[in-house]
Image (tube, rainbow, N blue to C red; front, side):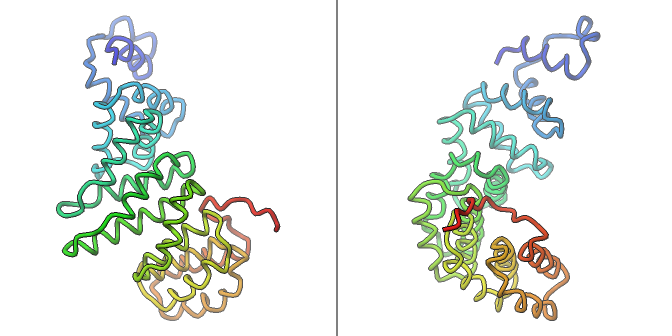
Length: 279
């Protein structure tokens, strides 16, 4: 990356044009990158967008530096989604790096960097559809028995993320249809959410959500969320949702209220459900 060019651009943004004449221009390439990474977290798109474009020109070395943001406890949502946007603009190099990030071993250490990357991709939604092949590989991976629970958490997050991309590839949709029959209830519920977002019929996913209403913890929360995403298609579930209020925690009651308002049409769904044609 050109030190002087980027340094001048950074100094204009940070100091103002009037200070540029007296400011030092000897800014290292690494310092340039770090300053641009900071700008990924900006709420001002006029600041953030040029940083994304500049970082995308940096190639593999800069991309590898950006992956560290997925392991950072202080990186904001804007920052990690900005990383995904930069990798997308790097095309093949970015896809390779993202793939390496989500396909790292789940046999030791923290899985948080993987989950962080998956969540960031999910927030980006359909524009990040280029990540689908890596997500499919992750979901299809065979787990080590000693790390099964960690694997299932990563897998279910990857399934939800794949769904948030909307319709992508036939391979992705075929995979989701297989996973909705998985032995683990959590995986079935996650797959039902993803299938709904990619265009499946109500009858293909509604029974999975209803089954999970008798569960607890994450399958229950996600099933309630999934029913909400179905909107008016899930109106028959309203009495069941109301009856849950007596046995669930306060946070789950909030999820129930949000689902009810989506079903009744007062809130819009969160996911990328394709526009229905009325057939």
